[in-house]
Image (cartoon, rainbow, N blue to C red):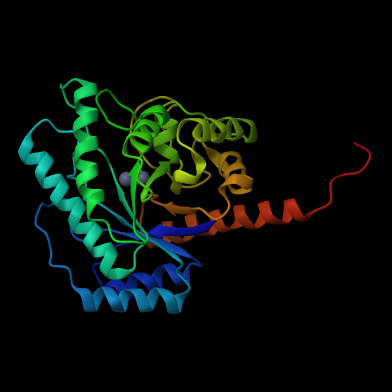
Length: 291
Ligand SMILES: [Zn+2]
Ligand SMILES: [Zn+2]
């Protein structure tokens, strides 16, 4: 898998690349601007071109933009829905200018509206976003923690978006903490096998372009979106080890969105890389004889 980290770009794109490269990442995720404002920054093509060159030089092979937290494609308020589409299109344009692979977005909340109507409205907005998508860019829908009116909390609903839109550049991102909060158990090899089989049935594994690898302390099915350090939560080392070893996930991208500062980032990335290194050496080791 391509392993990486969500990093801030306050000190510039090149500094962000240097940070993730120093931690041994081959992938990274950024915000295109301030994720808590509707104000859009102009697409700075030369800066994005420099960002692309820096990534290539540093061996960063997969890059994602996480869209603004203000995006709510499921809202029944036209103003919010339109602003959400505007933000989404902006990030797709940034991705096109910067050779960025994935634009990862939350879908939002249906609020009090009827789920079926809401689903149809989200499909319409996603169709509009996909109509102008550049080649080489994927629009990636992230699963939610599944609380109440949140959109995209179940694998079935994500699969319904994939089938209804039927667009080759539409992908899915599975956040492990959100999956767990939505009630999908992934804390052992057996549980991960079952989960991945279900993902394939509901969505199709080829559509799953990205994972967000986050541990969590929220109880299974707790519907709360709280990320925790890798191996120190309820998914634990066993869960991430099973994900690292799963043959169907090879070649996919996994991004850490764990809490804390640069020291925490370094520790989480080191833990993840260790899990993957061990998984590889275990697979290379001969099977015990006499069993
Ligand atoms: Zn997210
Ligand atoms: Zn996430």
